[in-house]
Amino acid sequence: MHMANKVETGPSASEPVLLRHDEAGVTRLTLNRPAQRNALSVALMTALQSEIDAIAGDKATKVVVIAGAGPAFCAGHDLRELRANPSRQSYEAVFRQCSRLMLSLIKLPKPVIASVHGVATAAGCQLVASCDLAVASEQARFATPGVNIGLFCSTPMVALSRAVGRKPAMEMLLTGEPTSAARARELGLVNRVVPAPRLEAEVTALAREIVGKSALTLKIGKEAFYRQTELPLAEAYAYASEVMTRNMMARDAEEGIDAFLEKRPPHWEDR
Image (cartoon, rainbow, N blue to C red):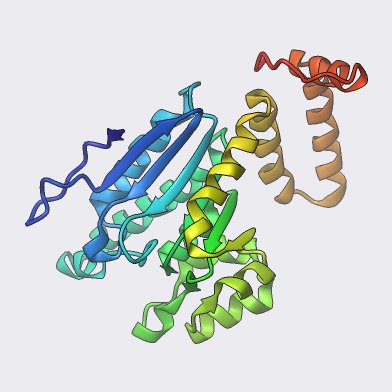
């Protein structure tokens, strides 16, 4: 296991705020502030950003899993830290850092899976919505409760409104009420819901299934998926057609099609 080296000051200074474990092409990043319900402190966001940046160019990593230690997945921003530096400049820096982190997950040329075992609220819910896939325990709960403390979840809203429909997103944002794992699946916020004891196995199985695909194809496809959603319909088709043509010229596409026609397993070269 590799441990990200960003630590915080205070009683738990010896504990890294983020853990990293690499195995068989899957990199598992575990938010490690259990006493603070994995609130996204500046130190934790910095550590997570650093790992994501490093993983982008790491050929050994094919899939990323983001999980949380302790009872919660992630309780959002660290409100104590926010209020300890009550200046416009400080607030702007925190929200800018968080937005960059969420964008990095979208731009990462590898699939990212959220493994959600407990509550995911505010920026924690944003984190789930920003991942490409999400698997949740039956005990998981999701909420954007900022409205209850006078701080509307405006940045979480960006990711949430792109993951679920407008009406359910607005209901979550305006009421702050928690959403069950089953309901989150209905809304499209998570892909699968499993009993708590099966969560890690389910996430691992999903990650390993994706690891078996061509890394180049996944990179091309993920980038295209998010770009086309921002385009009008005709432009999206024109863009996607160009991507398909470029993809067809790749060695892996030739190999994959030939393998399918010859009824044999493909041998990916990731080029």
